[in-house]
Length: 407
Image 1 (cartoon, helix red, strand yellow):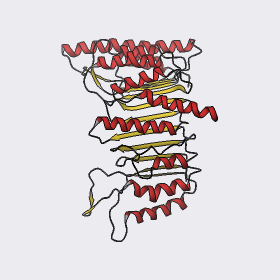
Image 2: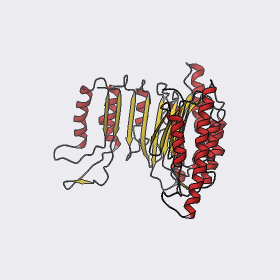
Image 3: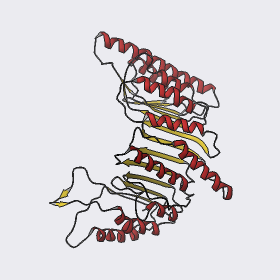
Image 4: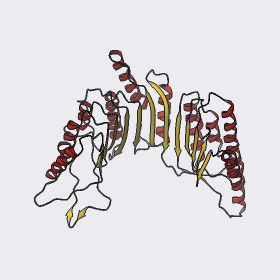
């Protein structure tokens, strides 16, 4: 057995057994039973709605207890073989401990390939004592949950944490982040500049490290998504920046203003993709917008500037509404007419891309996936016919899988 997952656990006090004693017993069972452990997932969080069990309070011990009883023994035992570490600390601040857990990970786990951290941020982190480089780590996945009353304190802590992570894990070529704050003013250019600078400095005296090739932002606001793309466009000529995979998941926004989405695609996503060397994009917007003339125009523009290097495209479209099946009112008939026109435009573009692919030997496009795609009945039937003759289409409700290479 090479993988262990320990999550969603809780504790209650015993008459003759403390939580620390219990953890010591667990440790003595884990290590002998898993001599080949390579992948470790750990997370303790309060189960929703459960605060007592048989009149006794359910406990979530402090992080320091787990660090001493579990993390230190695990890390020191498996330091040569552990390849992935996933810490899901929804009630702890991993970056605020007396003996910094991150320092232990950086200095001991010299063969770690992927690190995922979910952490609460409720205090300024203690990380100034970390002055080490970890070259082995290739994937860094961070989720930060804030508990600050002050926006300024959150921004300061967020910036400080990522600066330290980028200064330490300089070997990463894939970065993924999710943070619960819509309007924080983060200096993304400074953060990525730090990572690229550390990569360059290290490579002068050692072997070259991998460039950053994949960036994914989950649950990010329009405000911060714009700042991210502006920063990345400014850094596109960096030696250690070779972006091949890019993902943006926009925070749900039910303001029913489709122009906000269209402007973002036209002014930010299109420049980001056009003339790039991207191999895949994943762009998601789950907001609700009313159907109106040209509501697919931004999607059409996005599909028109796909570089020849692109292999896969995954688009989660806004949830356009305004057409009710069976309705016969004038308003709904007008919306249905618009839906038919826009659906025809999109399907025509997709069929055109197929024809272009057959004649363009440089194109590497293999798949396009749409979610929240609701076409008119006629357009859906035509698309199914066009792609279905050689099994290049699969439809599951509003999710469409389109293939551009022969199976």
